[in-house]
Length: 364
Image (cartoon, rainbow, N blue to C red; front, top):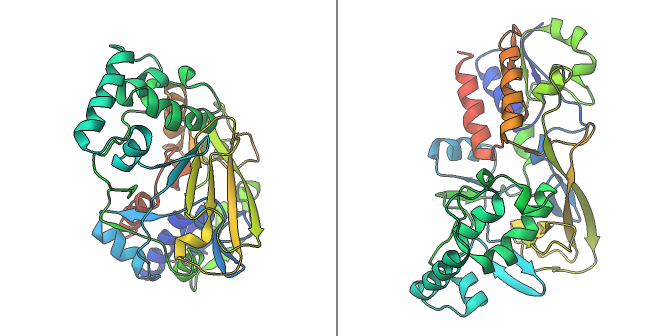
């Protein structure tokens, strides 16, 4: 009945379905959630586009990717400039001259470099054995204690001294007064949210919501010549080699009867004693002036079956396990494993767009 059965109506699956339809291919998209859009899904609350599954800021230096996504919506000029809250103090992120001036009173780049280098020498080790030693080697004690340690331990659910050093290969330090978090040439938020983009991609394509492919695979597999599976690769194979590890996130979203709660779209809470890692105030993504506001607190949690897998734990053990699953996947005829869950890899949105377009080329 169909050329392609696409499992997952997120960004990857929707792009592939859209491009397949342009080629005259017949597609069926199945989605186990009750809405399209995957983790980029936005819903309107009090006139505000709320990012249901965490903040999504589109950024890329790839003009082809930027031009592609802009055909589905008009993007604003939003620039991601998060701030960090630590025990009543506010610091700019990423670490830049505004951060160093607030922390030490440093005025010039040379002032900041001297302080960082002095602190690095005081705690440097030749071969870092864990994330804590790696971070201290990179930025010294003050930045690590105030802006890295607590946030990282909440994010990963264990002490920084128990995490491998490879998790932090570098920490971005800028000796300019520039609060732009990303270095990419293009950046913005779609005016009116992301859901409209997915709706346009899936226009005239058959979509079945509330449909778990793995529960009905025997029936659904017969409907198409090729399946593009964007779910967890280990779940597809019924965890036959064991579970891949993820970190998950729990969101608490509130409507507040005030116009402005925190003055910024993203505020990170870097002290360990505060259980959430950040608060998102959604209206600031689109410069909203509504009389109410909507905030979401993000609480990292240990993933278990039934939770949404957000961040793969790409340590040596999990990467070896994933390799076993990829070898098994190569023997699964007519099924392609794609997207962040199929590839067990963290992707930003621009990576997903590029990967989906590359996948679509093979359909020709």
